[in-house]
Image 1 (cartoon, one colour):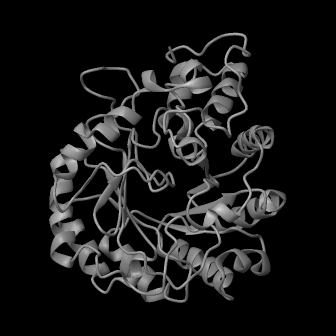
Image 2: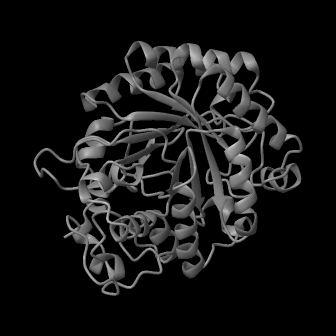
Length: 377
């Protein structure tokens, strides 16, 4: 679940001021295909070279784009991902159709030699708002070892440079795991040279191929949050986390200690993301139409071939249950920051089989800060 450039929506209209997104997701991730030419060690989708015959057809895909309009204004920010969405021959046709509908769209392709100047130019011309690229190493040797294909590092860097030349905003995603932790400083320096709009650290959730990698410890995660906050004060781009919403707690307490008022905190990139997490402002649709709270939380709430995507998000038991902070258990349930954060429901599920349990990556013990955050009660 990467945080592409979706703007914060107002919370549930029936509960003003609460960080509950029960009417419309902020970000809707759509896995167009699982076909991909890479073999990434941490791939959630366990992507393969060939397309699945069970993928949504072109007509079904267009129908889904029509249905997304049913969320009303503003519609979710649609992130087209995979696999590699470029592996679908109807990809640009779907982009053009979505653009005619007025949908806000971003694209998360694989870093391959398919990202030619012509493709980048076409993305810009269609009206794509941003492109997300992944860098998991500061050198070709490090990055390509994660992606499984020699040349991937060079293709990714070149695509980021081409996008910048075309005026297409870039988000760079980087895996935060035991295997990448020591390299993050060097990756940050590389990312700085590429001038993205946003850099997001994706904290490993042990699903798919990622089960063979190591997570950082909760203590190291906490230190990395502070390091990320320190870098955010100097970087000319937004710093974010994926599947580590407890970064918001660290950022909030640091800003509060610096004397920054609540109204100003709420307008920062971190503040605008308060409350957004798996199933609460986030929605995922698989290549076969299954709907989940996120791509890392494989609880199926319905299928777009059989039910309306709007109703699945608003009324299915899976979504209603996972987005209520009153249902959270353990430390997450007791945490005074749960409205801001809520923990990674995907990681809780991967570790315990219960999406409402404590996020085991968070080191915070409720009650150890001098005071509770206002608006978090």
